[in-house]
Image (cartoon, rainbow, N blue to C red; front, side, top):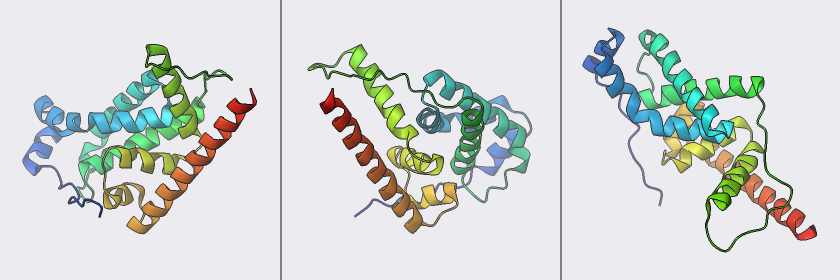
Length: 186
């Protein structure tokens, strides 16, 4: 049975008020705990580490500018992920994801920096085959989010999250099979 966690509680109102007032320490306490999740989502959507870092910074800037409008109806984490998804979608329109993967990849028997780069390139290529909403759902699930949390972030029911995750996994399996067939022909 899937582990159920409560959906994250709204941030401390005192901390939120201090952050809205420009208190740098309060801002740090509110935003920085969410940086790893934002980085994972942005990296999964954009592919390159540098692009993801830029997107996370842009997410934080937009969050700071919009902190007054944060109503607390969703968790701060959910609100930040929605901002990050919008930032990444805008970046993807401006700079489409490019795959730097070579046509032929020969697996190595021991891990090496080169193999890790190839794995990351393959992961980026595979994730790029998914629609942005499915990619986000899959990345959030990989980050440990519950179906309810993902649904809240995406505006979906928990049942739809299950369906979208299933479709994402199925699409990735088809991509992997196609890749294996291509390599077998080489």
